[in-house]
Length: 108
Image (cartoon, rainbow, N blue to C red; front, side, top):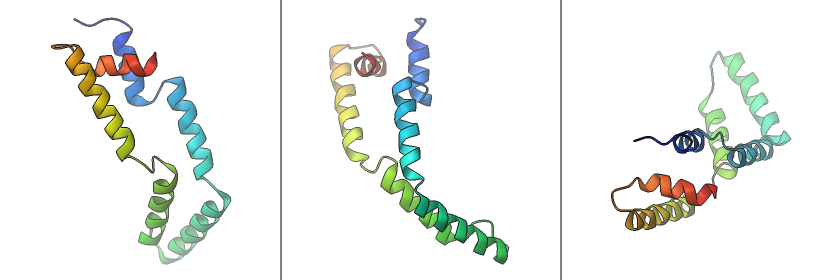
């Protein structure tokens, strides 16, 4: 049985369409696009264009380093917290979907 509203919240959280997630994502992306990073990337793009290369490994490495620095640099802590919450929800509600209980706790 599907309950109206709950599934839409679940889908919204999955795709990042909740206001808190959107706000944090916009803030993280603004912080990640520093002037220095943009200048380096533009310079690499010019060199790659002269060589006839779409995107060199150096540019890819620069982007990955920037993402590791600004986009979820500490993944292990949130994963551990979420796993713990899902296990609590599963124990509390045998036979029900623990993901829904987790989302209820996070969105409440």
